Image (cartoon, rainbow, N blue to C red):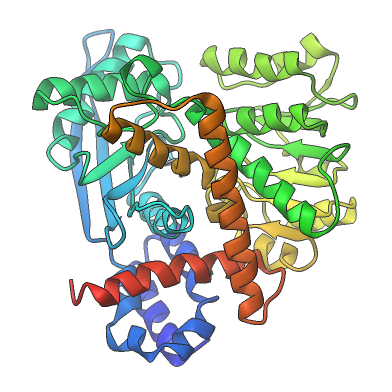
Length: 445
Ligand code: GLU
């Protein structure tokens, strides 16, 4: 690590000592940047790193709402507008009890590099609330979303900041948020992505993150002279992302033997079928956050309270939440013969796990592998601006091209800097260079 990077990292740790997730994300990126920092003294001169680790703006607000019993509830809302060097702030909203400023700062920081990799003009942002949608009625979710947007609407806009979904925020929530924005501003604009089809949503957006991560894995396998067909796969999570990944994997002939929920995991030796993939949607819609009923329905095994990383598989796709795969899980996967880990959740692997896996197996970092979701959000923004909509085939073809560009950019950049096959370094360097050059060109701002 260069002296400059060490100094910036020490400052980040001192200034944000109560934000462990944010520190983890910054350390993961900065620790790979030495080759470009050393070759480009203009970055240090312009204090690019110091500026990149500081969000341009953080909005934190009260979200009061009334539950079905008439009781007033109060949650905390946030929007972290991290970096707008290459486009309007862009990134999802997460509604989950684990949401803190640290979590949203790590997500906004990651999003800046991810969005840069997509080839589309989008800056980085993230937001959300500690509101837990689990077990809430539609009416409660609507009132919460309306209250949340009442404040958020002052800070966003189609050319300023375009939020979307993330954990706990899907089509229903985006619909309520959009309706409230339109009502408050008297404007029908593409201020959110992940919208319903009848009001400007893009085809393939719901599937995009899951499809994209599988396309990314295919491009990696191609480099290794291998095919995804016939590969045994373990997935975690049963939200939108895991569902999209499972669907594409089943279509391509991979054998998905494990899926998981907050209650444990399912082991299905025979491999998942399309009916199983469809059932994932039903489970999610039940709003109970349990995967167990899958076992009885499909004659599979349910393993309570454990993670799917103990099953024998060729490829693992963590698709749930940050730090869901730790160093011990990583060792277990490798001991069981796993040859590839495709991090699909944002920072799904702990630092220990990344260090252990990167080099031992083919390892895809989340900011490259999961970028398909925000990439199709970018395509939704284009369609909204043009006031037209593309067919599913067109969007899917564009998504595939974007995933190929991300793959090739990460691969080639790693090779250029003498780290062939290291997608972690390649993605960080490629994502960084574009944003850093834009910041240098725009002066001190
Ligand atoms: N939440 C997704 C992500 O982590 C998508 C964001 C978006 O579509 O703006 O990239």
